[in-house]
Amino acid sequence: MADIIQLLPDHVANQIAAGEVVQRPASVVKELLENAIDAGADSIKLIIKDAGKTLVQVIDNGKGMSTTDARLSFERHATSKIRSAEDLFQLHTKGFRGEALASIAAIAHVELKTKQPNDDVGNTIVIEGSKITAQDVVVTPQGTSVSVKNLFFNIPARRNFLKSDNVELRHIIDEFHRVSLAHPSIGFVLYNNGSEAFNVPISNYRQRIVNIFGTKTNEKLVPVEEETEVLKISGFVGKPEFAKKTRGEQYFFVNDRFIKSAYLNHAIASAYDGLLKNGTHASYFLNLTVDPQTIDINIHPTKTEIKFDDEHTLYAILRSAVKHSLGQFNIAPVLDFDR
Ligand code: ADP
Ligand code: MG
Figure 1 (tube, rainbow, N blue to C red):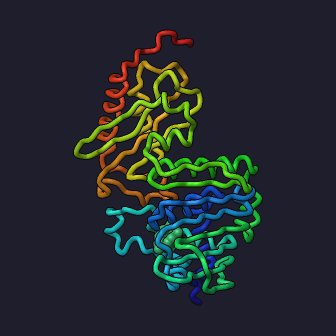
Figure 2 (figure 1 turned 180 degrees about the vertical axis):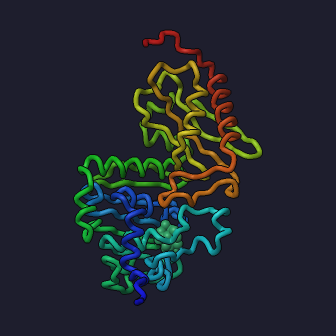
């Protein structure tokens, strides 16, 4: 019998990986912002055209890449962030899969410009559908700029599946909120179709929340601080009287990474027991710090869900810390339940 198994060419493998990593323009935004943060930037610009369908560009002032690294960055499983499987449990970076740039370059037109601090000139690479079409030296500021144009140009089914500009922009702004809330020590600017939509300077955490959600938010915040052997909590929860019918502003960050957790969300809800009107949800902005050994981030390509070794303990500590903070701020139960 003839052998029938073949290794897929790289560009096909990259396109398959892209299916998981890149769902929509907001996925590109997330990956590029995270790379800029991992590069140690303290100033990051995000430029969007047509809800990211025409352009997503991220410009950072981070450490840049060498000529060889600039080319390697588009290879699949090429990363500077981990060296061994053990490193997965010592992560201090957002990235580690070495898949994002390879995936994005498989399904878009990508232009990279990058320069390291001590070099006089930088490098530029243009890559389209995994094919490098141009590579040159370039005069460019320190740091890295990645432009992603015409997302899904070679996968019409995917491109047609994108939602309206309003919806796609909403996803992008959600992503921008998440990343910029996790990193108040970095300044972020967002330009949407040529005009400045957000400009959040380096600040403390409270100020970052206020800069994003408006000055009125300030009076709504109750600080939460707790430190135990397994969990450090720092951040804010919303006063119960400001709870809303929608679940909008609910943010957990674990070791500076936005995550979704229905279980931990329940811990917060139960801390408000008796304080909220029926059908309303409190806001929260909580940073949880845990030993990286006690979590597994590698359970999902987009890394928004993670696995904790001991969820039950975290639940209990979180609930009690939030309850304590709400109590300290003399918040009386709501008496006029309008059911
Ligand atoms: P990962 O972030 O998982 O390592 P990526 O495909 O996102 O994988 O990036 C590949 C590599 O390219 C990174 O490990 C990093 O070394 C380099 N890189 C990507 N973006 C930047 C950037 N903005 N500044 C400096 N280096 C970068
Ligand atoms: Mg990355």
